[in-house]
Amino acid sequence: MLRNKILYFMILTEVCLLCILYNAYQPVALLWIVVLLPVLLFGWLCLSAYFIKATIEEESVVVTRQNSYEAEVVIENRSMIPAGQIQVRGNVDGEKFLIHVYLKERCSVKVTWPVDCERCGVKIVTVSDVVLFDYLKIFKKVKKLNREIKVIIVPKVYEVPFYVLDGEYEFDGDSETYSEHKPGDDPAEIFDIRDYQTGDRLSRVHWKLSMKLNRLMVKEYSRPLPDGIMLLMDTKNGEECIDVLFSVGIFMAQEKRKVWVNDTMTQNTEEYIMEFMKCMGMEGKARMGEILSSKQDLGKGRKIICCLDQISRECLNWMLQIAKENKVYLVTEGKATVDLPEDSGIYICSMAELDVPAAIERIMNE
Image 1 (spheres, rainbow, N blue to C red):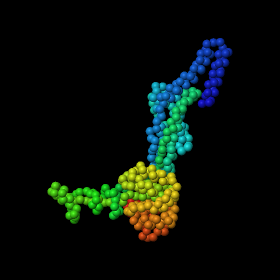
Image 2: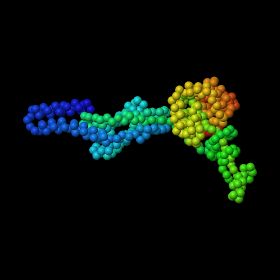
Image 3: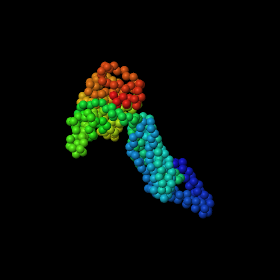
Image 4: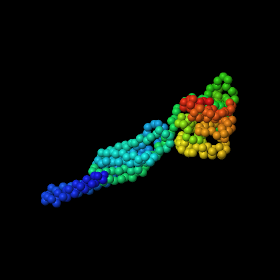
């Protein structure tokens, strides 16, 4: 742009010299053109800038790790005159980017740039401003935008086979959650009402409905389920370990089950994702220390999945204690080196021996 300004003043100087050297109307007319042209270009630039609109359609987006994603800004020209060159400036976590586009009259264009999604975490894409130039690039006008796009890069989500719900283990504690797929023996909730079959207990006959329909109808009681699942992680472990925890948690959240991420309870998918990503960015050992020192009542009958980088004696004793009333799974990146009693009740899922789908199936079915 500076070069264009210098070139313009050189041309203006030459035209002025022509007017001095030659007493004719042509140099004077040329001088008027050279002088008025920047004024017209500046007025055209201001008018174009008034009709240029930049919008960001997504302020927050969730992307699976290693998937491609491109941040997007829509630039619209609402005027009847074409715009000159337009620059979109911003940065991705401090790394600057600069994109050039041209706009015709009454049209819009999507400006995109890729975001690296190789590792989990949260990246902030900042679109700082949109810069408009006249055709000679003598003047520019900056339209401040200062908008952000939060890109949440989550672990890979592996499919959890639907049939695992039929493998839910027996639970005899109090619960407000009941299976939607399998009946049980809890009379607090009716699972279904069906026709009488040989062998059904007379105590389960729905007498009022049977008299109304003139045939025996039987009540099927509901199957109580554990009130949720707990995921414990203390550091940034291997990607496969994190994929196992995240996939199981997503599945449970979509089934409208409570999911604890460390010591925070989540009750829907959005809460779960945000808390999981928050814990990944924290100093996990300090967080695990809070859980151990709080000595909170973890309840019983839950599945507790631990993904710990280093297992201290204190942590091992804690897992052995809660394994008496819960099912505890220890997900390790390599081969487990922990010596456990045969009847410890702790199930080890080593990612050196299992792939992610096999580890998920083991956790959900055992």
